[in-house]
Length: 324
Image 1 (cartoon, rainbow, N blue to C red):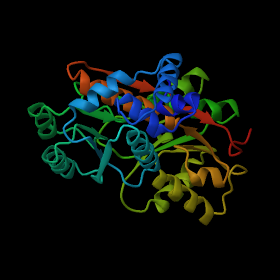
Image 2 (image 1 turned 180 degrees about the vertical axis):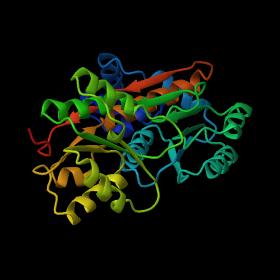
Image 3 (image 1 turned 30 degrees about the vertical axis):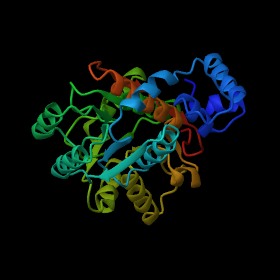
Image 4 (image 1 turned 180 degrees about the horizontal axis):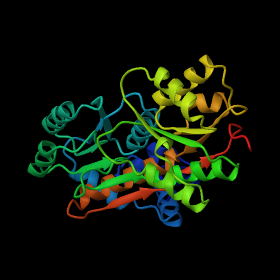
């Protein structure tokens, strides 16, 4: 998928110049305009749709309601999204709902009052009130990374496949006593399904203790310590940065080393995983952001069209998995 940056590189101009050509600005030399248009054609870039959307925009702003301010993946997406929207003279309005569905509803009302052109959100849980609120307004809405509302357009990561990849990597290394640790959420993430798929593929029986959910608030080191002491997993897949940090703290307090004593794969990748060389499930931030922008402007031009896009994650190999 070609981007404005790709066009700029091909034409030898800045992103701002490409944006001016897309928006038919008169302040572009004819020779430069022709180079940009040629690059657009060669790369099969689709600027016309974006230009028409921009002309019909009410505020040139996009609302983004994020459920978890501590999730580094969401923050990376927001930062990359703002950079891309800058190319089209759009601004991103970000609000954090802190996994509070009531606050989420309040923020939707705020976004509507500000007349943003479209609302992106990572839903915290299903809410009849929010669904009715969305249905009453003309403003398009896209749910990101959590598909909780079946009828609302969505872009999500295939977490079932991501967990399958992580589990398969541990199974290939000989691990059979693997623990999947997730935050307790009011909806199914699909990760347990991917976990069990990999176990079945390798002929390893699933046992109920292999899936642990922990409260999203509070410290869980004591719970983790007791759990590891009782069940003695040789490998773990912690989901969410807070659980990852709590697991690392618990292992450190018990003088348990990665990967000599226990193998670990993070879901998602972050700066801590990179620092301590932990294998992780990773996401192509630039690709995901480009997809969001494409669908965003397409939705502005054709609000009647529905879509549910799924992005595959990948396994980022480091040195935290020990072969048994």
